[in-house]
Image 1 (tube, rainbow, N blue to C red):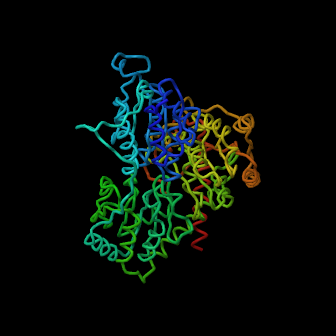
Image 2 (cartoon, rainbow, N blue to C red):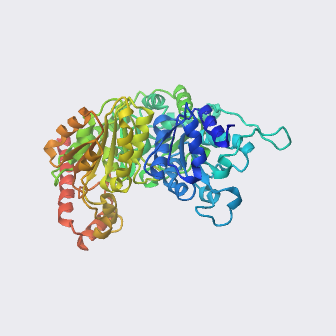
Image 3 (cartoon, rainbow, N blue to C red):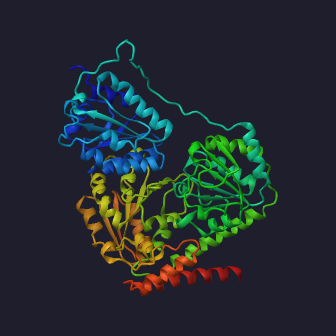
Length: 598
């Protein structure tokens, strides 16, 4: 049998270094699946229970491996299901390629069963490159372009394969006018700004007396260079959420996360700085940055579209974070006056004491802050962390003390629920020798996480290190949105939209052959973490937590306080309980500060 178009694409993926694909079969992609079956030496197909999980896994694969993530689905509904995970990759600038089936060419345009206009459907999420293969000679350059653009531009691309084309004999482009002959491979260049711009930026930073740095995901491979520059400038470093696990929290001057999920140390630094350096970030919330005109600013980004996007920067440096930071470090003078650095470090020390105070607040049955605070010392140095979207993100952002060598991510730009367990799966496939922890709310777990556990149960035995923990915050409430209803809208909790059914996540895990642990009392927290990390198989912890523990912002604004009060006066069903807890947290915080002053 001669090679088909699908056989060629499978072999071409291997040439590009693709080791595994995440996908689900269907008749619209059967020819490609047959080629995967025939390929004795890969790439390997990993089969989740849903195409959305597959796309999240492709995004997570890119985040935890630095390689392009590839997902596969059938035509129509399968292609639709991929979209959410692909948007997650696009919004976080991760390289991902979707390969989707389509109906036969002769039936296109007839409203055939499962026929959708996939080019139109994918034009937004894969706007840099979406193409349908309509001729065997086209397959070569389409797959090459899709991979090269995805990797080079750190974006999503899409290849559409009509089902009849999948089984056609492969043909090389003819040696005639109009034919295209493409090749494999891409090497990322080192982009360095012009020397004059680097000199100007260094002079601006040297003039600053109170320098603040905001770092995003673009510093992933430039952390040492970032810390070296910060040391010379005596600067503090705040982290956007995607950089949470990239920069160690025990490094000098690291104030932690910023924004609604941020720390008071980061907020105070931004309020008082006179100079701002933005590195590899598109942090969206301008209200948490210095006021316009307060600070002179420099920005570094490999993407020109990000420069000057969020703050009125004086000097924009289009370049790689690592090379540009190193070049700036060579140019700036060492600041002998460390007064600003000392103030920043004092705010950091105060913040960690505040988190201890808040975690010590009694709740019913468990304060989730205490659960995350206790997790940090249990984490192995090489752990991989996947956090879902919801109240868990607050506690992850503020309470997990990241150490050098750890990996971690969240759904940043899209902020989609359901990402954490698929991320955990992709991380374990990429690094089977490393332990992993996913932190998930019960809403996200019921939405997609329970399905993803089936995939975990299918594959975990092949991993070198079986340690794989899924922490579920079971509070029977969509608590993050509940608090947004109270504080942002001034509305009481809307039980009809917020109530969740109780679910025995631990018993469900045991049904799947995993370990299930139930946590209902605060005094059991350390013991349960010890059990989970000592287990010989993946563990699901069903942790009953108090959803009325408020994810307090770094600073409570007057409007937020008014809205909160209004929500209680309108008859919030748990107003007394959450008001008492909030008062306790604020009281402990103020008491801690008073002790510090004494």
